[in-house]
Length: 167
Image 1 (spheres, rainbow, N blue to C red):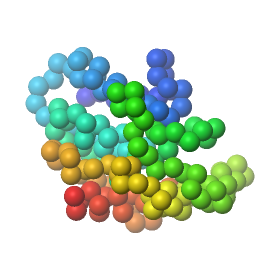
Image 2: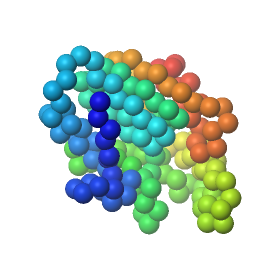
Image 3: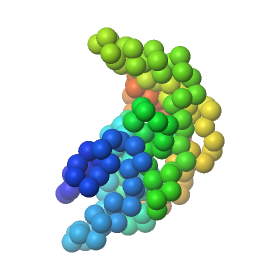
Image 4: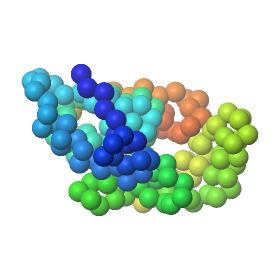
């Protein structure tokens, strides 16, 4: 079992923005395990795991907690960029800058210490996004298991889990 950092460490993106999915090739090259390969992710890590699963046929299983069915903007609020890149190209993404009022309200709540809820911003981003920003879970040939709550205040994980189940 390996627990992987994918940003914020030496040799990685400082912020969760434009993180190269190609890092997983290095992980695969260092693995000596035989048998099924399972990738597990939570929230933005689930977004990462889903993106890896559709690009790396070596992945047999994916377990996603609070998943996303779109690739969203990264968490560098100084610019509008994808969370991930693939072979140096940005992965198409749903921009969070489509509804400035929601984003400013969410940010203000965080600043003053109120419970954070970004769901309306992510919902607006998904509606405005092109189909190319959708994570095509049907392209994953393995097994997937998603856990999501109907009252997720961060983003619409239950919508994503249902969409993945229907793919």
